[in-house]
Length: 122
Image (tube, rainbow, N blue to C red; front, side):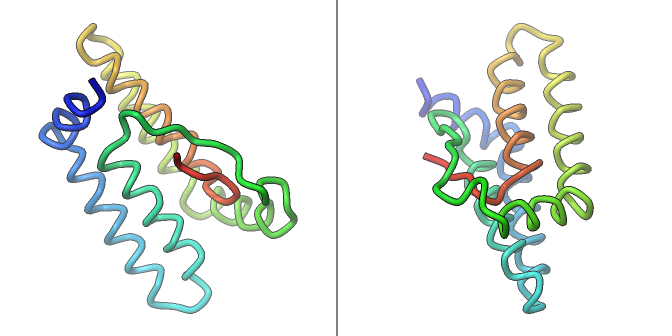
């Protein structure tokens, strides 16, 4: 079932999310300071391409000082806007019965987009 969900996701716009996260990651990796944030964009891009069947778990450094500081910087600069966009898309998709599984995936993306440091996608 996750294969069908991922296939529909890609056809109906998941490839756009993937490309936007890749472009954002490449732009952030241009500077040395932006490399950790660019890596998180690449992690989000893979989840944005095939979200069905993936689970977000806390990594070993989810509560570490560096992760907390980077998450705060991420929220201030990019994270809040990205997460709100995914939540808005989730609300729009949840209005229809057929869009509910896609809305759940947008909520998953929003949670990771809000605090990507210290989390892994399995």
